Length: 222
Length: 293
View 1 (cartoon, rainbow over the protein chains, first blue to last red):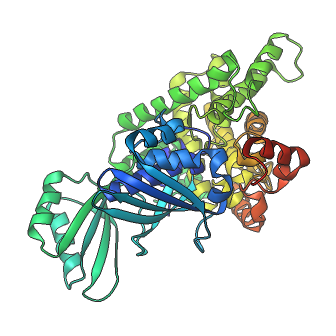
View 2 (view 1 turned 120 degrees about the vertical axis):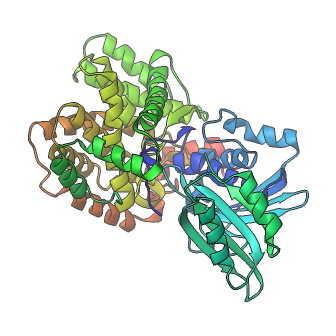
View 3 (view 1 turned 135 degrees about the horizontal axis):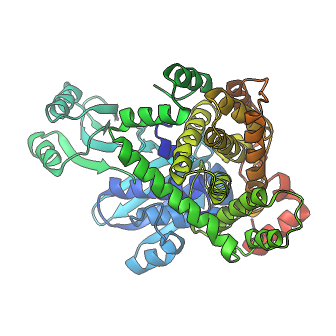
């Protein structure tokens, strides 16, 4: 995972006190919210390592909640995310666990809405930069820094080449691509980061014309 | 290009007769497809936030959410006004600005992570004090953030800028090196001198552990930001005077990574070892979070 932009270093603009434990945590929560794709009603955060040891002091709990509520790193509402959560009826729980061999600042987020659930493990790498390590228990990695297309589909021969042709035809450049599946012909997730902004029209075409595509999400952090 | 080695940036800057800041600006344009003016506009916005966080705690005491710390930037400012300082007042002002940013940060106020929130005081501290001197143009100071960013990118990609990975040397050390680099560029130094400033500043921070009391970004983080602002100014002056870092800056960065890897977990932002483990550190932790933790 590389730092590319000057604003990875001179930024983000954020409320304190920690870029990894506060700003990065807001971003992780925000990614989880976007993956869920609907208002969350219940969330469980399992923290490990340095996150688990210091989350209250760094406001990591408030930051994660703020992200799940859709706030960004510079929102002055971050310090009162717990109150906001109560106001909108979001039930939340924090626990400390050992998730295994991950970066010291890692959290598992289990999010439920009225119709959907999303589960991810993500790490805060430093300076506000984050990376998702696992999505719905499959090891797919993405940062959310670029427009990220998440495709839930059935594993089938030619899927990747079809998607990449569609992207190319619309002028998208693939920056990063990964596919993980449970079994041959089974449920699969493809995650694709592109350099350009994804349009609603394009997403609409994908979902209406590809029968084996169950669901689509777009993630983009600020 | 991947920004990983300072010697590569220095060589490129010299061959193209541009500053390291100009070089990284071209890389940013190429990577993001944004125009020069869009990038500089955003950098100006970052600097404006840096400025207001540097001024806030100097004008009035700012306290942390925990109540453990705060008001030090204001104390230093009042002391400077008495006119009996050992250190040159303009240098001490850099310290008070740095303290202010870190105090605002501890109060969950708005700051710019440079490169991290825990080390966010150093770069604005020195740059706002340099702006105060009236000797340099604001746009040159904003441009110097690019040089600081280039140094930060090299360190982040070669070592780490996270206290949980590399200790405080990775945060405060990196910020000090970035600030020294920016100052050398403002002061008209060569890309080589920028490199030496990084080497000198970083060497003076090697081994610094991340041992925050109660896991809060307060003790000793705030004080370290204040004092390292002065180190950054001094390292820049050393480099501009012609002092060289005998160990090349890239090797210093590499060894910072190794030292970070060798640091025990208790000294990498867990709030367990170091100052956090002192009797007072433990007492403060218990006074905030209770005995169960």
